[in-house]
Image 1: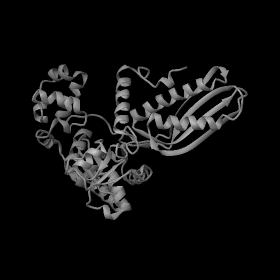
Image 2 (image 1 turned 135 degrees about the horizontal axis):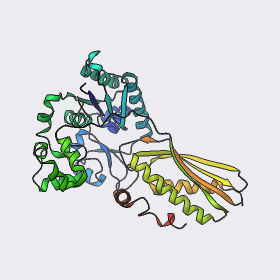
Image 3 (image 1 turned 180 degrees about the vertical axis):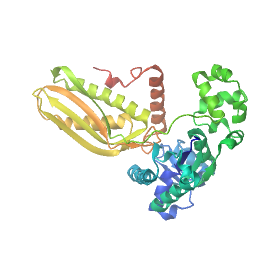
Image 4 (image 1 turned 90 degrees about the vertical axis):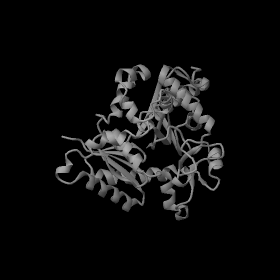
Length: 380
């Protein structure tokens, strides 16, 4: 049976949400981001015309498009709207994967015998737009890679289908950068070799690609031929992420405990960014030597940044530790998660700070989670 895989993407999601609140933003250049030293979290098509892109420094974006209106953004609103869209899609589709806060994969395989897959997908998109007011694009094909590329080519508010016989002719003229797994480094490497279109890439021998870019060469070759066997993974929302430490000996060494909390926060934040989560509730747990257990929590703006979350954790620890008694256990839990497409809180953090975290994460990915870290978390 030929698979029927749909990729759905909410068009300029953050901007579209803001336009629901303020209709005066319609057809105006809009940038979602924070502060003069911050970066662009999202931008409207009107600003993209001038070369503005996500993750670009706000200052640079405003030089390119001085008329743009900069809005800090409301992650809680975006999360609520995303949940609303998710519920609409889940009511109508048997298998849904939520790839990010504004991006979905649907598996409609076998449904064409009851109801045309393209017609069904079109009605789902119309239902989303009617019930939420948010524009949405989709592409239908036989796998995730082709449908995702198709959505990108059909925006904004595109409705697109790439049937099996047309896949290669659809892919061939496109830039290799359109393939989801091709980042800037791989793109630059391929470009230097004269490989700029998917057709040229598809004509490369697979063993040569493996020599050039390593173990991903075979996967890249398959994607250039429109081959992708990855399944649509049913969506389930993670509720929390946590860790705790029971000491070998009860302690009253507050500086040592704060160091342990710092290390906990750093490890949890690395996991958050790896899985693309943002946090809105911080919980600190403490157990005294007599086994009395207390917790404190607070609600915060969405973030996954170590320095921000560590500040809240240490503040909560000071509030929860009210007795001059030895401590047996401490723990940290992050809840109120939203599954977003950004690895950092782009509304608060500067370009330099985001670059620092991304560099540290790359080092940890390559050499292990203990390879680099904050000095305060290593003083155990």
